[in-house]
Length: 377
Image (cartoon, rainbow, N blue to C red; front, side, top):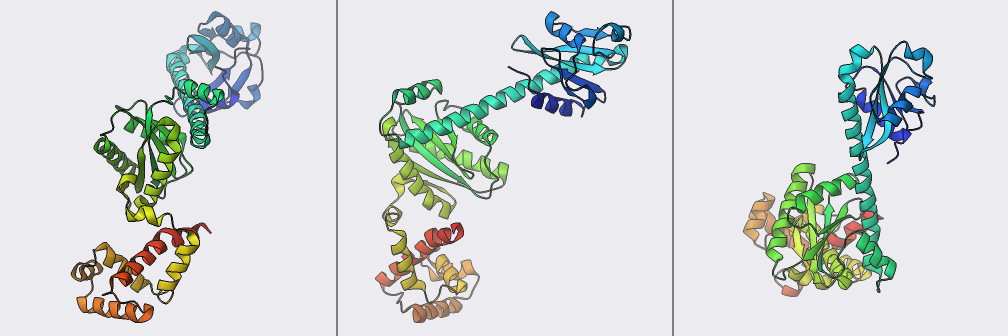
């Protein structure tokens, strides 16, 4: 591993929070690449080079300042990574006074380097996995390079899979660290499941399925993850879950998960594609048809948010007048008045089953498609 100037500067910044001394970081060639004294940047430090070559602590005295190039009295300590010296960290000052800081400074520096290295590895794997899964969903045939990438990432292409698509509401852009955190929450007993960031507000879980009768297990795992996200990030999470497929049919499970997620977002819940009935059919209706149908039914009341909300709640309460009035905190006579007003404006008859279905569908399209299109536009 190379000790880059950007990382060295970061280490100086972090160390200065704990130790109020002049500090330098030197590469294996003896060049100072970060320092609290910017005048020393890029200069040669003979004491540090000695520390690199001999892999030991080097104390610089006042006498050494005249015989060694570029040094000041203080302490130089080799920085180890995987048993190799990758640089030197130094403290300027009276050796007797700063000696107690030595091991603390070295240990802190090495921990910061290890943390940076593993963070880079996580980001590298996350980017690789994201690109790999994108190809997995698109490719019709697996090429030799694709299979080699799967082996590199330790992905079993022959395993049966189930795709879970998650949406996080009002969350800042997903970071690789967020995905890593969720992976650890999920992967206590599921080491072969894959987590992939999927845009700014979504992520995928590609489950490695061992047992066909695992729906309840999946549901419990997703519930735990949903609870963790909502409690940790103070936001809502919705999940769409596709069916179990062979590895070369992953796109099919993705499309099912995407369809289920559309319904799950509306409910802020967890929806399996296998549980979809009416919703599955409605998703096949084109956007222009949805728009025209909604306009025909609701055009006369689209600006009346009170009526629209009343009948949203009406259907949520399974068309119970009593429960609808209670949910809206209105008198039941007020609800009767609103029903009559809607019937007059729309020419619907809510005692007619086809008219009730038409009203339900128009509200469904309005809430799940037209509003989203308006926001995206």
